[in-house]
Image 1 (cartoon, protein in one colour):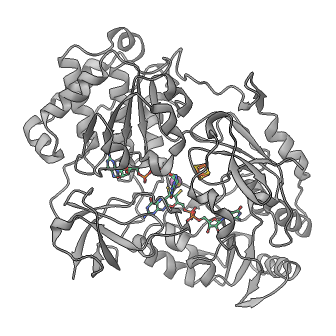
Image 2 (cartoon, rainbow, N blue to C red; image 1 turned 90 degrees about the vertical axis):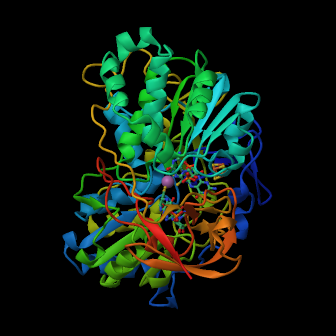
Image 3 (cartoon, rainbow, N blue to C red; image 1 turned 135 degrees about the vertical axis):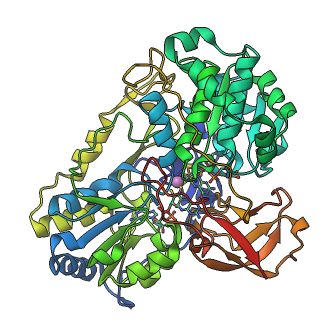
Length: 577
Ligand SMILES: Nc1nc2c(c(=O)[nH]1)N[C@H]1C(S)=C(S)[C@@H](COP(=O)(O)OP(=O)(O)OC[C@H]3O[C@@H](n4cnc5c(=O)[nH]c(N)nc54)[C@H](O)[C@@H]3O)O[C@H]1N2
Ligand SMILES: Nc1nc2c(c(=O)[nH]1)N[C@H]1C(S)=C(S)[C@@H](COP(=O)(O)OP(=O)(O)OC[C@H]3O[C@@H](n4cnc5c(=O)[nH]c(N)nc54)[C@H](O)[C@@H]3O)O[C@H]1N2
Ligand code: SF4
Ligand SMILES: [Mo]
């Protein structure tokens, strides 16, 4: 048995892991650099579900599979929904889609994650080809724009030593504290900041005219659009000074700049436009198609890989799914009651479902209400392959140990395919299919073939081959009607897996006491939480981490304007004693 595998979690870094004597360690070579994060360092301490359960009683895997079969058999095909999340990001997770799609059940589309930003990128560039994070090593300046690397992508840190760092984030994060410039702007004002940066860059003759003339020739029209912004009023609204804009421009001009964006900027209805305005600033600087330059967001981990699974199915959005339309709902790798927006709606809608099946590793709000709980095998005990949404490697994930508990996604799908007469290939066939998309490079590692280290070298992928700028500014200034809710990622949990946070964080100047219980209220609902002080926050923001129980009582299940993406920070909130 090989003892090298990869972390399966939904994370930029996709670390390579050595499993030795029951201990997980980071592979010394390459991007993983010999270290893992707290989730994997303590992975075995988080107790996973060992036995299947039906209506609260422990049963065997064989019994669980029979009940699952009966649950699917007992209703019409269009009364079955397969809802899959991203608890495990490896490629074999999709094998269940293959069964449910061919059987005739419903699948989901849309995203709880990065979809709004991705839509903006595609509108501007014609595709979402990411600057791989490894390329940042060659940059002079790194701008972290709505990204918190110490928490969500720590393997970038060794690559940015000695570089000029700019941070644009309403929270004074760890990286903000060591940055050369930190713009602690008001949330949801990034579109104005990005447009103003483009405008002043143009005024100061800092644009890359050679690049713009051949790859983004409508730039004068875009400059005109940026001139529509009322400077004084908008600076005041953003809580940014002209001096800070000057500081950023001075640091980036004529330098190799990487703009490293996270999901923080796009958890709003106009998230696509925000991302597109940041991309436009990158275009004005001529950052595309050059080494060490570009925009690094969340690319598609599936880029240049064709799925071997048949996934043609009717789909419903995973943001506002009406669960009550179905009799059997099969939930895999996800905790929708906690992680979908508008939890009160979700809980009510799921309560009308006759058969709720939870197929996962850990107990949570969703396993608690499920009629049938089927434990999955963790990544150590099954064969898989993974890619990243942030670098171009493909990591093989052979089974590195044995366990009697749980069942793999492949084995569960193979059982259902056999029972319902659906064709399925062997597990080896699929693993080999994925591996065929990789080529080995001189460093000995495998990379997804055809993914560029420097995308858009020749041209963009739009119809005109040029960058397409925003031609209208639809975003409005937010009204002054409550606190901004920041709901970002926590160091101790991976969304709702592992050690989940339990507090609401407030700036001490707001006058609430530590440990006091307050009620946080939005138009969608409320949640009671204990207060912890955090003076890295602005005093117009409150922070409740993703994974905190009840946080999504506050959020809306509306879609972003240009994609089926969740918008977790759209609602303002009140604090009540
Ligand atoms: N430890 C840990 N790592 C994770 C995860 C986890 O739960 N825990 N989750 C994984 C997943 S699913 C994802 S999608 C990635 C996401 O990783 P990141 O993209 O880093 O996501 P967030 O932590 O949501 O947000 C990043 C930053 O955006 C800031 N922000 C919030 N609102 C705004 C705004 O309006 N403007 C600006 N400029 N900044 C804003 C927040 O303060 C935060 O510092 O992380 C992955 N990695
Ligand atoms: N308020 C707020 N809400 C958010 C976010 C936010 O920032 N703020 N972030 C959103 C984002 S970016 C995302 S990506 C989503 C994530 O939301 P979800 O996809 O629901 O992710 P998790 O909460 O990590 O739950 C994953 C589940 O997968 C199961 N699991 C783990 N490994 C395996 C496996 O190998 N097989 C199977 N079958 N199951 C497994 C675990 O039991 C776990 O319960 O949450 C979204 N919700
Ligand atoms: S940093 Fe990300 S990929 Fe690496 S071990 Fe932690 S969760 Fe896994
Ligand atoms: Mo995500």
